[in-house]
Amino acid sequence: MDLRALSRLAAPAVAALLALTTGCTGSTVQGRPGASGLRDPYFPKAGNGGYQVEHYGLDLEYDPADGVLKGTAVLTSRAEQGLSSFNLDLSGLHVERVTVQGEPARFNRTGNELTVRPADDLKKGEVFRTEVEYGGRPKAFEDPDGSREGWITTERGAVAVGEPVGSMTWFPGNHHPSDKASYDITLTVPKGYEAVSNGELRSRGERPGGHTEFVWHSPEPMASYLATAVIGPYGVSTGRTPAGVSLYTAVSPGEEAGSADALARMPEMLEWGAGRFGPYPFGTAGAVVLPPRTLGYALETQTKPVYPGAPAEELVLHELAHQWFGNSVSPKTWKDMWLNEGFATYAEWLWAEEHGGPTAEERFRAFLAGDTDVDGAADSDWDAFAPAAPPGPDHISGNPVYYRGAMVLHRIRQEVGDAKFFALLRGWAADHRHGNASTADFTAYAQEKTGHDLEKVWDVWLYGEKRPA
Ligand code: ARG
Ligand code: ZN
Image 1 (cartoon, rainbow, N blue to C red):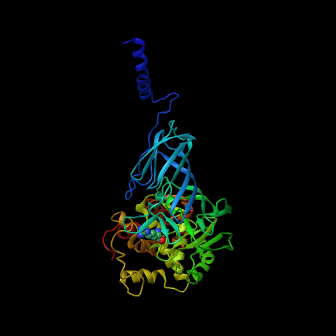
Image 2 (tube, rainbow, N blue to C red):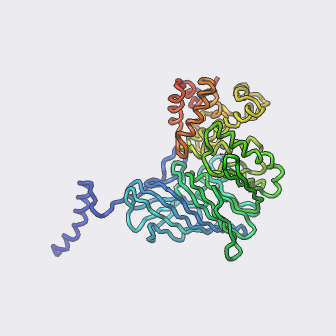
């Protein structure tokens, strides 16, 4: 063998060795693959490592007649490490093309992971643009507790609900609540259909081929499980609260009469929430009332909760309370669900106590006594497990997360009194506004803010396996 050829062969190895020993890569970026999951305690494959998304631009065309979705997703992300490849979560559908920084990128798929290998490695700290062209018939699936989530078709349309991991059925992304981003969602549908999504409707216009395009804008950070798209024949009405929050409601035909009273109270509820929890975190609010038998539950989809038919007043209050607790202050992992549901449930109790219903103290006692007159007190198994430690992914929306979670808050109130308790709720919403928080963050914050030792409450009510006495 020619000596010069040998030295040419050896050169890259020498460079790699040098880079390893000096930690300096010179001009070539040495990326490594981003993780395929964020090791959430309940959904370990949800989300992806190595980058955070700052903005999603989704441009979607949907035809209710054949159920086919055609989409382009443009993700603006920041690399948190040098990346040779990274993953997006996507379930079903067909990926046509991926580019990164405008260059075609190789990609492959296994399970719900779409692995993208950019032409050039990405540097730590680099902000990069990923464009995914995709399409097909999105499919809903059953989550571990047996509920349906994802892209759900209705008789004359569809609704997308993503708690906890259903959003991967309709767009590729970093589908874990710890990665929040702003969104621009454009929906193009056949003329005659409405198309509703999160945030503000920027424009609505006719497009060639008998289509209508709806451009929705969500400037505030949003966890991807709270993204929605609702398509179908809906009756739309708009308004504005006295505080300047714009309102947009879409009601399925036939549900108007049953929905009217509860939806009419939204401005008052938002006003009340601002008084109790601090300023409403978003520029818009609203509601979507789905055709009956579409969905088995309501979801607090950001700025536009969806309801499975005409909602009761407490349910509307619950989903609006989530805009503070869950949507603005989002859980760090799916183990922290009681920070969403315990708070939204306690908000219902507070609303009732200030609007002629039972006091929260009465409600709390009714649960302890198993009172058959009070919803959930006798028949919900509210004491079946510790709210901060659901036994598995099939229990993150279980009754103890809601009711016993609310009781944790009431126990704090009993210990610290009303003034400190309400300051705690407001402070918590303010401190983590548009962010993420864990149970440990909350317990530390509550003790510091109130100056009380609450260890017993945590041990017995939040983490204790036994039914609190
Ligand atoms: N977060 C929703 C609410 O409290 C309920 C979601 C129920 N999902 C489920 N898989 N059980 O309004
Ligand atoms: Zn809830």
